[in-house]
Image (cartoon, rainbow, N blue to C red; front, side, top):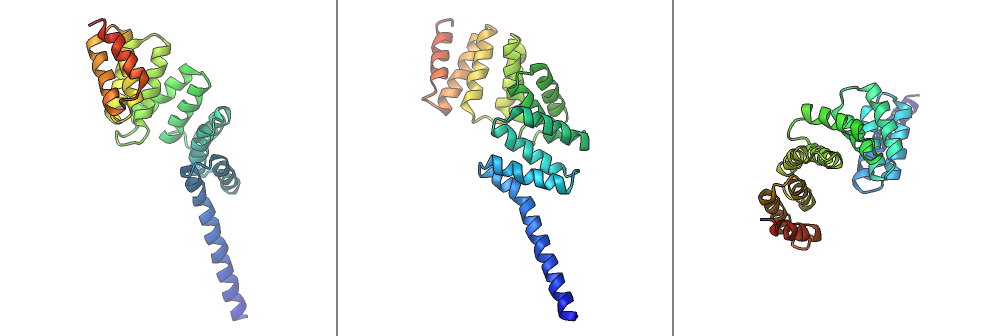
Length: 206
């Protein structure tokens, strides 16, 4: 009987260990670019525990990376029903809405996110970038300038963001500052065609 109890206990610990490992795998799969597999693991985790917010977060990240934007929107909303103030879900819901063309809804989520997220949060720069893109679509170029500037301050090594900052300033008629932004993009990536042509356009207006 004693041996049986010990065996049962070891078996339980082994199963529990495997289950814990499976729960960790969703994030590992996501970081390895295996988005569909990550979603499957998260779905299983949520079946086991419908209140597991981490699973909703990783699932939504994976769904957006896999361009399953409608599903990401729904799952983010489901996750926020469990944890209404989770900033990660708020931001990823904004991304899902952005890619679905729901610009007003996306802007609302991004504004919530940047208003509350610590400056050290990994996605603050991305949130400002998406806000800048929405402002450009709306023809609000000064607002786009502010958003892209914030994005570039947060993550100054992304040449595309400097290009979009240059474009926003160019559209606002701020040619000197636009030229500087295009120059910075080219410093980061000398082969960036958009930065090169943008700098040439603006240079003719200085």
